[in-house]
Structures are given as structure tokens and as C-alpha cells.
Length: 88
Image 1 (spheres, rainbow, N blue to C red):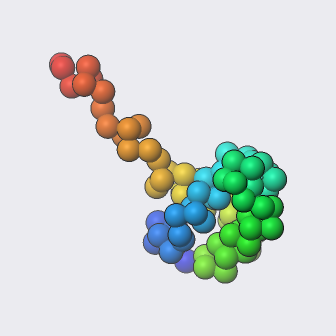
Image 2 (cartoon, rainbow, N blue to C red):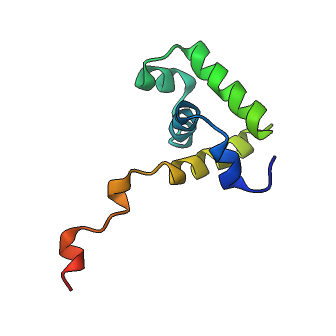
């Protein structure tokens, strides 16, 4: 697997990162498919592409990538302070 995890995650398409985020949340292939409006076969294809692009070979490596993808695709609103936090 590539040493720089952020660089590795950047190789993935938006939909591949989305699949990884759902995987990090503990979703099954079937649940990911339902949430994204895809077939289970398509989810499997995305995960095969992710493995091919990243070199991940184990579930542990995929879970690690998934957690990194979840951090890099966090909603912007969660990183922007509330206006009340700025009034100090």
C-alpha cells in the first residue's frame, strides 16, 4: 500500500470514497447499496477498484483507508465554528 494515506485516498473517485465512508461506518455491502441507490454488484465493483488503486489486500487495510476517507470527506459544516463560538 502507498505510504502516504492522504495521497492514496485522493486517487479514489468521489463515489469510491463514499463507499469507503459507509464501510467505515460498519455498513454491509447490501446496506451500502441501498443507501447509495446501487446494486450490491456495483458496490463490490467499487471496492475491487479501491483495492486495485490502493493496493489494500486485507480488511484491516480497507478499514484504515475507510477511516481516512471519512476524515477527508467530512462535511464542511462540522469544521466551521458556530458564530456563538466566535463571540468570545
